[in-house]
Length: 206
Image (cartoon, rainbow, N blue to C red; front, side, top):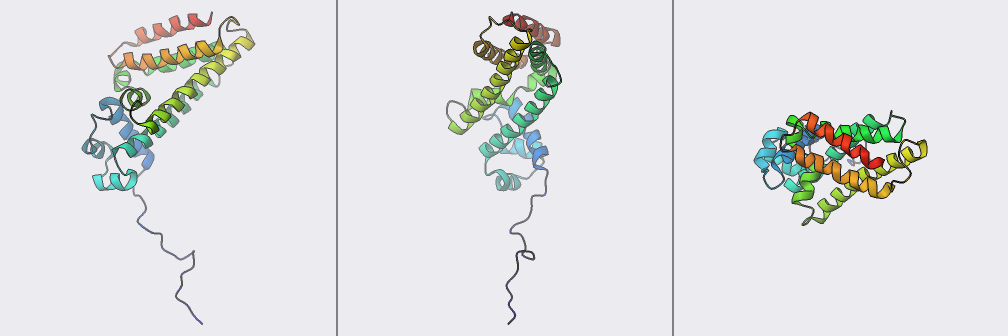
């Protein structure tokens, strides 16, 4: 007996597939949130930047908070990939730390510096009131602190960092410095000024 039941192979997918590049749209949203902040950004701002209709935005991300959290995750992937590319090829722990500091210094001057850091912006605006956003920020900070600590420990094992340095405390200090550089960078500091911070920071390592 024949049946009209459809097999999984010929069933039509429910709903229309998204007709936009999600990563590209989120990267445009990153720029808006970084410059304007969460509360200063409207759905209209995001619609214009992401090149999507408000309806498409709501369907894909539900609301402005959903866009921020997705943009935050995308931002972390992009920044971590670039940071690791900058430090991984370098053999000595001390030189890895300097490369990481220079990586942040490059992002903390000129137009890029004034655009700001989405981790810093999210921490300042939402970490105290939004537990999910706060967790995202905590994970981001913990990741960067761990990278610094591992580089310090490597430096101590290869002789490029003094063994008198407490790796955990120094890593936390470097994390605070890195985040502080991004905040100061919003004020339009020059490249030489931010690179000079790197030189001073290296003295923490003995």
